Structure formats: structure tokens, C-alpha cells
Figure 1: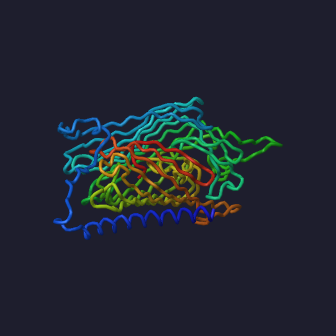
Figure 2: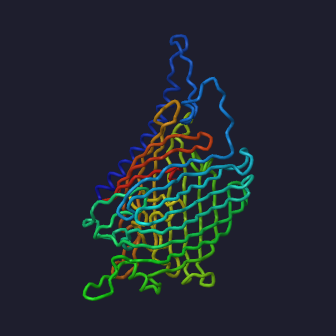
Figure 3: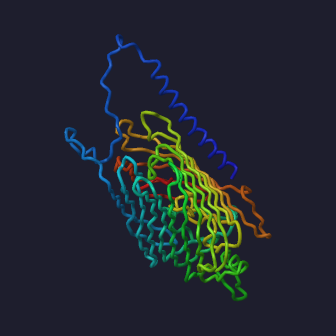
Length: 441
């Protein structure tokens, strides 16, 4: 564990150091240019951002003006022990709801997939800016017939010294080893937030959120002696008066958003900050009253004026169960963010607790230096969760689980900054591939 943290800290230092070196080198080259009368200068190349389609377009042909709508649809083919063989499509839509001069681009990543174990995964996760950015709409709609392993609460659960290495694809599924507790369930999730612009880049609004879990099958649970086995899900549900076969969380939220990003799908600069306070009410259908606070911050630091694609991005959030008790599957967990992209290196839900804090840094850079069609990323992340159970009593930051990874980016639409993204990440006895049409954050 200590060695993994040291490696991650060293890598992050190298990333930051590499960015500083790049800036120094760029400045030095400007100040130490030989005199024009002693060196024959070559005409500068036109090194503007290109996309994969530009390779097949005739140079003399003028490019078409950018459209107001784009769609990137990708195949989704994978396999893991929880899902079996998975086949589907995914991708993202991008569009402008007003003039491009004063309206931000909107986006909606989506997936539709079926598996050999009779599972269904469907979702649309939208971030929409209306004309002149007057309203900012955040949506998360899902319907799952699904299975997922759980591991209990806290970043030390289970004992990782006894946990075999696991592999997954795009955060889905995971291992079904002896240390995990596989579960089957159906999920209906509807979350929609309407934010109104107050001043430039600053929004406030309200939202409605529904999480309905039903037909839950806790596969290792046994209530019959002598083979009695209480799973983490059953123990938590019984202790906090939830029906372990299904439950509902339905509530309203108050939201504050600051967004100065130049593009939400693939930002080169700006800041995104979000505060979401949600309260689940019995009169709206919740099994219990409970409240939750989400705090999030992202920023993007450029490393080159000539190549804005060369940058370091930072992401941090905290998810806190403030009052009452949330249902087990709605507790703060990896993959609990809107895009379900946190925790590359681990399967979604791998770490769960009453409270969770997460941080990530990513170095993004062009590989093809002139066209910048091909790019790369290197990233590190870390997660901590707690477990207030007196028998465990695990506090935030008592245990921290890191991960590290790298990825390739292929620019397919330079106007919407849409990439085909393929990442590989390694966590603590866990690895995963990630394939998408939009940056992680």
C-alpha cells in the first residue's frame, strides 16, 4: 500500500515537472532564436487542431462550416464474470441550442447493452445549455437489469491481502471471487436538475431525484443454519430498517453551479464547481428521510499557449450522508458521479461508505505534434471512504486506495472536441479498460 502511494506521488510529481519543463523549453526557444541574417528560416507549418476526417479531405477543398449537431456512436463489446458477454452501442450526442457565439455546447453520453446473463444496461446522462446559456439542465436517466459485486463499507473492505486480482471493462461488472458479495437487482433512476443563470458562469436551481431498487437478490446471503451468512448489504439494511429485497430513495435538491469551462466535453481551460444538497422525503415515496451533500471541483491548467490541448486537469469531490441513513446501494461509492467515471482502475461500487472523498489528476498532451489528431493521457487517482459501524469504526483518510493509468485519444470532431478514448488503469489488485466518446472529466 505504502509503495503504491509513493509510486503515485512520484508519477504526479513527474507530470507536474514535465509541464513546467515544457513551458520553460517553449520560453527558451523564443528568447534564444538565432539572428535572421545567419539562419535560413523555413515556412512555418499550419499546425492547427485537426480531426481524423481531415486526413481524407483534399487540401485544396475548403472545410465545411461546423454543424450544430454531432453524433458519435461506438460499439460496446466486452466480457466479465458478473455480466458474461456484453454487446451494445454507446457514444455521445453534442449540439448547440442557440448561437455558438453565446451558447455553450450541450452533450448527452448514452449506452444501450445486453449481456449473455439476460441483463440490460441503458442510460442517458445529459448536460444541456439552452439558448444564451440561460438554463443549465443536468440529467441522469437509467434502467438496469443488472448484477454487481459489493465488498462492504470502508476503503479497507475486504482485506486486500486476501483479494485476488480482478479485471473489468468500463467499470461494469467485476469479479465473483470469494471476497466479493455478488448481487442482482433492477434499477430505475431518474435525476433531473434545472439551473438558472444568475450572473455570468454562475447558476442556481432545484432538482428531483429517484432511485428505485427492486428484485434484489443477495446471492451469498444465507439465513438458514448451520450455513448462516450475513452479507454486508443484508446487515446494513437490517440494522437501518430497510427491506433487503428493495427500497426507494426519492427527494429534492438545491444546487449551485459555477462553470467557466470553454467546453464541457473536453475542456482546455476554466473551472467547474458544483454544490448539491439532496433531501429524501417520505411523502415523495422514500422509505426513510435522509440527506446527502455533494461537493465537486474541477480545473484545467494549460501548459502551452500554442497547443491548448496540452494541459493538466484536476478533479476532486466529496459525497456525504449528512442525516438519516441512505439505502445501501445509494450510499456514496466509486462510480456515483453523474457520468459514473470516477475510480478508473476499479469497478463501479468497489469502495462504498457513509462518506467518500475522491481526487484525480490527469496530464493530457498531443502525440502527433502538428495535426494533434492523436493524443495521450496519464492519470492518477485516490479514494477514501468510511464505515461508522462500531465493530469496524473506519474513518475517512484512515485508508486510501490509489490507481494509475494511461490512455489514447483520437480526435474525431475538432469543432465539438470529441475524442474516441481508450484508457487502461491499475488499482489495488484491480485492472480495467475504459472506452468512451467523452473525457472522464
